[in-house]
Length: 499
Image (cartoon, rainbow, N blue to C red; front, side, top):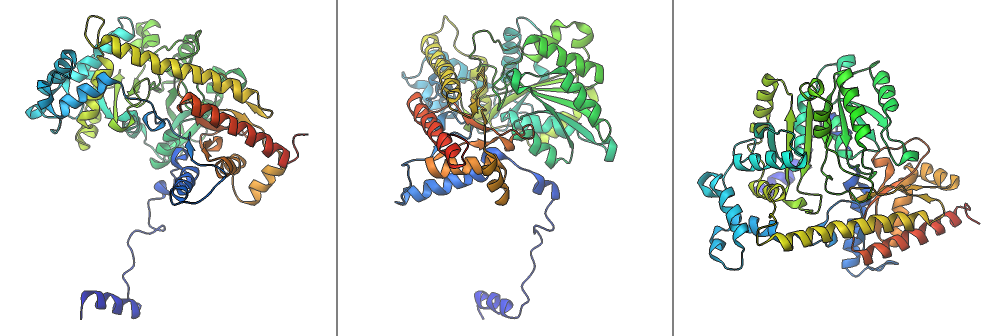
């Protein structure tokens, strides 16, 4: 009897082996994880895209994915110098090519000298290539106008997400009322809620003030902290600055209040600063939490535990696929720091191509180097276009009845509030879905525009939003916003909320 026949016979006799891993035996924390940015709406968008490719017809010719901050997928061109250095590191034979500038070759040679066997295909030390860690420390010192940075506090990561997950793993402990509480902003980037669910920690929501341009209210922090203490032990506060999905840029005064709060309540601070280059409003400025902490004096700077995160995926670079990132961790207990290094060593090291990309970001061409002019032009062009698109998005959305959009001060997203008529809310509930999920599904099916429901990021009860990126080209963004406007007016008329 053939093997195939034996398997068939096993089926006939009803003696099929049961699967070990089923939904009943699956880790319940995995089932609790949700990640809206790549959730049901995006899966549906992929199905529609495939349907169109196979010759199907819809009221639109393409799906416009405005759901995720993936700059290059939306048409942004790579920064030439960054790609030159990474190409040279990947294929060193190009060092002989006259097509590559000397300043790129010099950087690539220096990076390769720090790699085992002078190859990007080797493992690095778990915290990252030493010369890259030193370049990052020098960059931080320059960014923060002389605030000291120790390269041994720098850890390269696989995107910022890897660093955030690693720090949370160190912090989560305890049972029942002593379980770690993690304070996160609402609305938030779903990485945080997903990580908290996976680690079975306690999510402690503090709400940003939508009526005040999504500002962080210190009184709200105290309210959330005191309420959480009744059922868990808050140990960490997470801040996203500039904000995702809300696009606000925190003022220096606000950051001082957060750090004072963390100092008083003995909280570990996690500062997600991946959008530090993305500030568009002229009267806003990026302030790193570390610099503000330093300026608050030694009592604060030498005691508050702070992890700050950066990435190659955002900013003007948009190099998501390289998965480059780093974290700087200060004031960590030396014994815990050894445990952090142990935890990092389990995943061996971050991808070396991503480390090389991160090095170019922190060590770009200087004004006396050959590549400076082109680099500066490309960087300014990307950031200038994003600033224009941020303003355009705010203006067009605010002209639509039933939509209110705060200024997009920074980052890459708008998070407009949408009015959903009571009849539409009732219909959504009858279908077993959140009203803004119902709205976004209708938007996708009727216009081909893919955005993410606000319920995936968290929002105050009774309010509805969606998140959209401002990354499409200006021409495509105008089309997208025009379609959103027309859809929303039609939606209101359908549910009798607009005369």
